[in-house]
Image 1: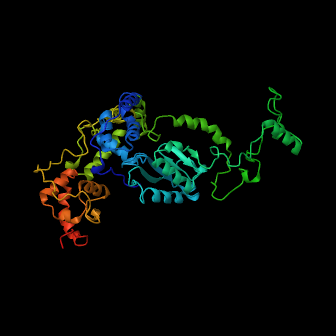
Image 2: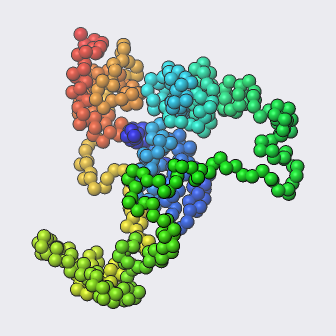
Image 3: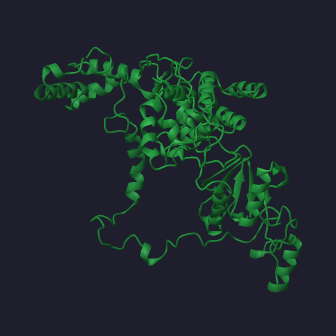
Length: 484
């Protein structure tokens, strides 16, 4: 399973809150669960947050954790485990999920993915330039008979061709997605054959007439047609086809076969006579019976019987166990007997039965009333940034760069060559007026600090040395006009 991580900090919104309608729905959903089980609403609440925002943000995960009084890590585990949750921004107009499982793959899913690469983005989970469309490949969506197909939001579009998918993408991108009717796109009704029904086209009376015409009688086994002879006893005996032939030569119990016991041909009736006695013996409490000995007042009779027969009691076993421990385990390594987890060493079978009975009552899983994972943890104060980390020392605010441009001078440089700058950050720098390596190379550190604060990078731009990287790249890029 692939690793699923939350989106970068630069893509995360500052906060999250349900709308008034969704907040009322969330409260009603939580009340559906019994007292103490409200955390079971975590998946519905995360899905409603995704429906509202288009994807699951860090702020939404924190908000759900506070509503359900859950440790933040528990909600994060759910959000990152289930692939139904989108952890990165998706297209504002449509997010297209292309089924790539075997039936769809055999029917042309690869062509549909090629259309998405051409019309949206070459890689999955990336939006187009306008941010209106995104796509991904998913597992089976349950419409195999209508393959190939895609899902857009909560509707499926089936029996697709590459040309039809291009039309659907264009309509959604233009904000006209409601014009596309969900379901098969080739004109057939649901999953019926395109040419219409070929079987089960007549009623039951037509079937009776056909059978009588072809075979000279009605339904099989000579039974009457439906509705006739109600209440009469059927004279046809039940079929014997499924019963084994116990009279065959191979099943004769008197035959000798390889590996058969010497007394394998003994009269089996003897065992039948003894079975009741053996069953009664098996219900008596004994160490060999599943579940071990029963402990308590009922054992007095058994202990007396063991003394008469010379059998070892449980006290003898405890003494043997203690002797074995003393022989191989140093005294300072013995477990403490008074912490409630280890029964003390005793000498008599009666005391042993008492201790084991109390231990069983305390530790038996079926009688345990509480578990060790009932506390919710510091849900209200929990955040993704660990409070255990020492805060970074405060620094002076930087200076806004003075050489910001309203437009690139010539061809803009590919700022993504600088480590730490991706397509989103490059777009933000372009919007600010940074287009060339020479601009970054001329910055003073205080100007880089201002940029770092502007991008909310928490010192990352300084640590990654954007100025030094830009100077190294400047020689291979277009020089500043007028520098020559």
